[in-house]
Image 1 (tube, helix red, strand yellow):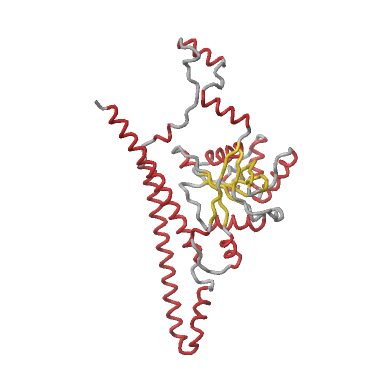
Image 2 (cartoon, one colour; image 1 turned 90 degrees about the vertical axis):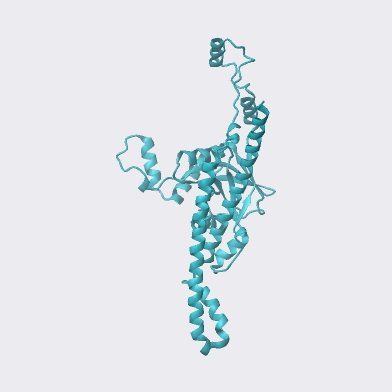
Length: 346
């Protein structure tokens, strides 16, 4: 990565350009069911605001690409990118973007997730490397294509807290609150004024209403231009009442993570019993050093790492919050549908 960028101060909000958000969404949607990653480019504009203006995907590993003789330039470029290391590919992309006057300052990375699953050790280590080697204000943007298909754009931004950074740098096997591992940063989507006006015209139905295709359709149906509705209404997904598959999948994943937490607790109990058994044998000779031996035992390489169970607990809390939020909205839609049925009944 590049040299460490000294920030002016901690960031409190992330602004993402609409085009950059669409690039993230397209890459994650096209790669399903495979989870993918990419780089975020932008600039810190002061007052705690970080702007993300561009994004590009990381190449797939060479083992995942086709091992055939390519004949055109596009396939040759794809194969060459897959053979590159992720760091080397990122530097090449930033160099080419600088030549065409596009923001080429790396401010973080993005990753797709499935139903909010992100709290893993590899995720923490990757984000730690960005905040250590690049900038303390480096962020990660998570996009969930599955939750987005249910009518709600799921685009979240996180960074590691200072407490978690100090713990990881020290290498100690200490306990912290699972809520203090990640810090969620508010995300705001920004669009230029022309795009804002275009979106309003599309929703209102005034955009492209005088095109030849619309005129042909109007002549064929015999309706006037005023009666023809060409607007785009994207709010029907919010009225979907089929909540069972979504909740079942959440509960299934929740049970799996609870089982993982139980297995981690068994590891702690087994190690604590062995540690107590060893301390019992040493107590006669060392006496007052018993407490020191216990501390040394938990810092040994054989001791189970507390961070694993903390990440699992954080993921379980995330699932519970998502189920609570989705169930609350589901009940509201059911009560609304029940009221409509009662009004229609004689």
